[in-house]
Length: 243
Image (tube, rainbow, N blue to C red; front, side, top):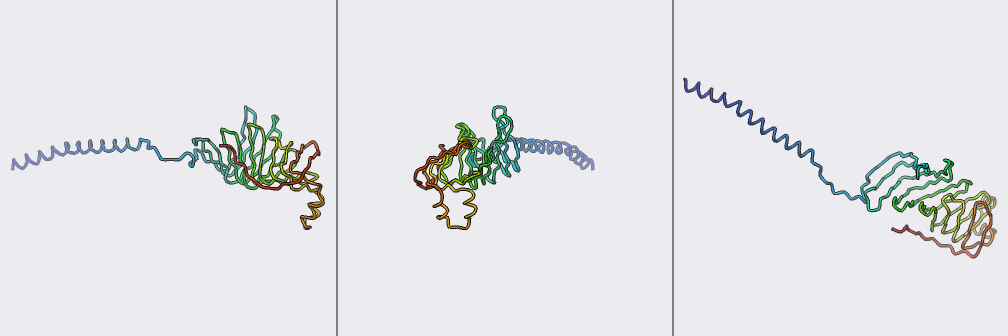
């Protein structure tokens, strides 16, 4: 009997020691797990394909040299600041307004999608591009480049310019930023507004035949109606920005 009591006593005394060792093992294991959780694992992410910022339902003002110059509205804005050449993408339409030094609206721009090359300060507008200047003149094309450094707007695509007195169509276009002094490279038609409206259902060849002789280069200033003309050479090209 004494031997059994002694053996039982030894076993009971060993329980606290075993429990303490078990707690130490668990503590070390939990500490190891905690250290693993705090580690930062590098992910294999392509900065050219993965945006650093994604913003929905954007409506913001953008300043240049401390002066508010633009209002941007878009349902989706993707920023790729870690790319080799940082860029922004507006894949689901863009509405942009440009302001002068006194916050007066100089022009509005709408398009199906847009890309902005940050270092080059170059906008590439695609889809149904529509620009309206301060005079209310409307410019319609499928692709437009806007170089903020050179303060110029240009396109090699087909363009239609709707003015108060006439509609001008052609290929290739260069303008200042406010779209008030522009140049059409290859003009294909100049139609008086009243004739084009009245003859909407008429044969287009007959309507163009009644228009004045056209040129392949026409320079137009918003404050002038002077037009130089030669024979047309209609064509369509697309110029990509220099990378």
